[in-house]
Image (cartoon, rainbow, N blue to C red; front, side, top):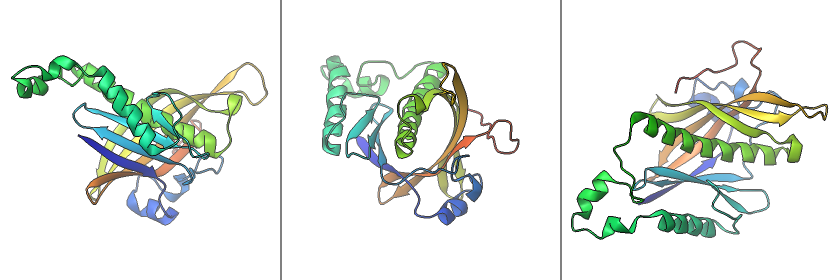
Length: 231
């Protein structure tokens, strides 16, 4: 079973301000005055049977990229989905469907044969890996929107924290992550940056839509702006 959702920009800054008190209007853009464009899009494909989420990003040239990277880029959304389907077929354990007690077996194992009864630390790492893929898609979108290519591009260093928040019957992801970028003076040194992102989790007409409310480059020296979240 799969579920397709879309990551898009809200239609107006006012809607961002009204939907979450954690993301005031002054925080809807980065420290340099930039905000994410709605030209490109990001979809989330939820594989409930696998307990995993894949992301697909549409770039400005009309090509589709998968997260994690499964090849490509692809020329259509359909091709990107086919790539995910092929990947799932490749990692699927054929023994999962060769036993009479397959129903019980599926309750104990994922389709690739790994046990669902893993340690808490393993479950947390799996969630962190999925957030890493989501943040990488958002960061690639940000780099492309503002023509930050090559040495100018932000490279994802680490997802520092992520949290799901329920507020006024809405769900949000709050994310803090660090990036590296080359120093502005063209030296071999790199600089570290911290970003905050808020993504709203919407349920509409049987599907899930993710709306980017905030994507901010933060100054850790400026107190009162940096969001420190527990994961």
